[in-house]
Image (cartoon, rainbow over all chains, first blue to last red; front, side):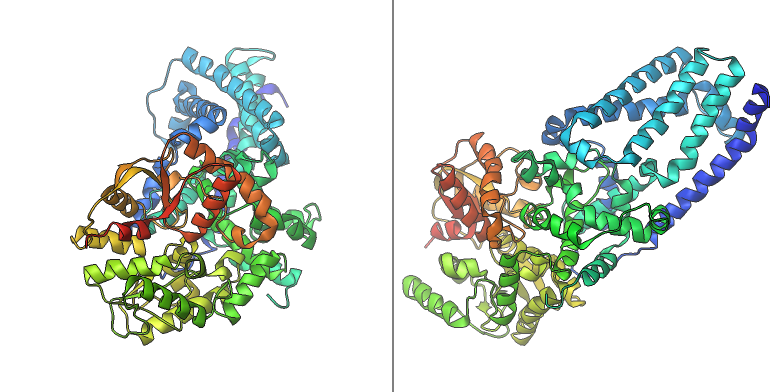
Length: 219
Length: 419
C-alpha cells in the first residue's frame, strides 16, 4: 500500500465506515437514554417545564459570578478549547470544502493563518487542561482511563492537522492520511466515550431546566 | 427498612434510573465544578465530597445495566461490579456529606441535576441497609408515633393550650370546610410553638378560615430524607386523608424546607395521585394576604435584617419572591447576602443531616460557609423560614462565637401586626 493508497482509503471507505459508526452509535446512545422513560409529574405545576428546559439549554453556558470566581481556570480553559475546536472544525476552508462535497452545504470560512493560530492556542489550552487534571486533587480522584482517552482523541487530530498544514515530519499525502485517520479514530469512539456529551448535554440541560421550571425556578 | 439486603439495594437502584439520570451520567465530563458548589467540599477540601463522586454507586449501576459498553465490559469481566462494601463506604458521603441542597445542580455546566440523583441513590442505600441510625430512628418514629421527634397529639394539645392562654386566641382543631389546613413540623411544636400563635394572629386579623388536624399535623417526611418511598408515601397519605376528611381547599406547609418539598412536590408523586387540594407554603399565603391588603403592619423592624433562603423552599421549591416582598414589608433595612436567592448556601443541616448525630461535627464545620456569607455583610439579625435551618443557624452562630439573633419570618410579621 502506497501513501497515496492510504490517503485514498482514509478519504473514501475509512470516512464512510467512521461516519456510519459515529451516527449509528450516537443513535444507540440516544435511544439508551430516551427508552429509560420518565414518570409523569403529578404535582400541580407552578411554572413551565418547556420554558425552563429551553432556557437552561442556553443559560447553562454562562456561569453565575460566584461560580466563575471559584472555577475560573476550568471555565476559561474550557471556553477556549471548545471555541477553538468549533473554529477549526467548521471555519477552516478545506474542512468547509469537505462538508460541501459530502453534505452539499457550505458557508464562509476564516483565513488559514487565523485557523493555524487558533490551533496552537487550542492545543495549549488542552495541554493546560491535562496538567490541571493531573494536579488538582478533585480531578485526580474523579479521572479514569476514559477521561485521558478522550483528551488524547481530541488533541491528536489537532496535532496531525497542524503538522499537515505546516508540512512537518512526513510527505504531504502521509501527513494528510494521518490527520484523516486520527479524526476517524475520534469519530469511531465518539459514541462510546465522553465525547458524546456534545449531544447528551442538551438532553441533560433540558431535563434539569424542565424539572426546575416546573417548580417555577430558573435553573 | 426491614429485610434490607444488597440485592434489594441493587434492584432498587436499577429501578431508580430513568431518562434524566441516563442523560446526566452520559454527559458528565468530570470537570469537577460541582465540588466548588458544595459546602461540604469548600469547607473541608476533601475531594470525596465532590457531588458527582458521591453518586459513584448509582453511576456504576447505570453503566453496567443500561449502556452497551458497560454491559460488554461487565460480561467480559473487565468492569468491577458494585459491591455491598461500596455502598457501606459511600454511606457517610451520601447522608452525612449531602443536604440535598441542590446547589451543585445549578452549577453543573452540562446540566446535571445531581441532587435529583442523590435522592435516588438514597433509595438504594436504605434498601441495602446502609442508612444512618439517626434517620432510621426518625423514620420509625414518624411511622409508629406520627412524628420523627416522637411528638404525640397530647403534646401538641398542650402547646396549643399554652398558645391560647398567651394570645387569647382560639386555635381551631379539626374544623371542616375551612380554606386552610395548617401542618407543623415537630421542631415547631416543641421548640417554636410561638409559630402557631403567629399564624393564629395573622389569620384572625385577615379573616382567614383555617384549622389544624388532630390526625395529621406533622409536615416533615423523614421517609424522603432517608430514601424509603413507600414509608414516605404513607406519611403523605395521612395528610391527604386528613385534608379530604376535613374538606379543606388548601394545605399549608409550615416553616420547614423539606416538609415543603415532601408535600408540595414529592407528595402527589409518592401517593400516585394528584391532590384534590392545593399545597401552599406559609410564605405564599402571607404574601397573598399582603397583596390583598389583609396584612397590615403597625411598624417595621428598625435594625438591618438579612434573609436565609432554605434550600427546599427557594432553589428546590420556587418560593423566592414572596419572602423578599415580606421582608421589605416588615423591615426598614433589608440586606441581601451575597449569592442569596436560588444560589444561596445551605446552612448545612438539611436533608436529614440534623437527624444524623454522626454528622454533628461535620455540619458545624461546614457552617463556616454561612459564616463567610454573613461576614461579608453587617446585619443586626437573620430571618429564615425553616425551623430546622433556624436551630442549626443558632447552633452554628454560637459555635463560631457570633452574636446574631435568628428570627422566623412568620413570627416577626405577627409581632408587627397592626392592632
